[in-house]
Length: 99
Image 1: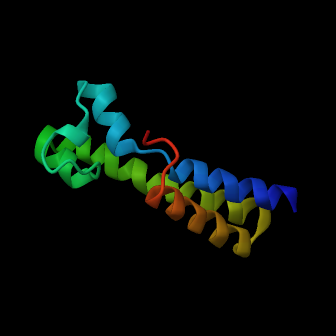
Image 2: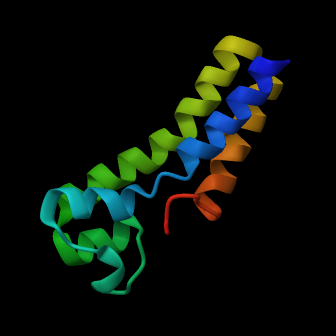
Image 3: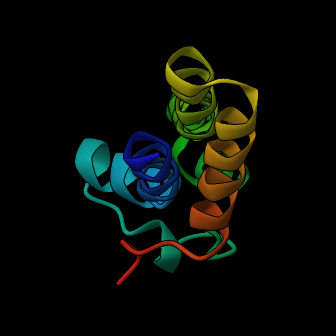
């Protein structure tokens, strides 16, 4: 039971990682919120910083939802996989780390 709750929390934390903000800042020193449309998504990264960086953002955004669901399924079964995946979606929607 504690493992199930921890996996859901992990899903939220992973979903909260704003790769569209962090990766451009790390690679090029750009705050993507101040460039292009101001959106932190892969499309704005593509338009302002190029395709390669946008692919990295897109893959990391996919992984932050997929990884918690796969770990949840592997360790606790289908229900926890769904809950961890939904928690990752909630974290993407309302991230802790956007500041």
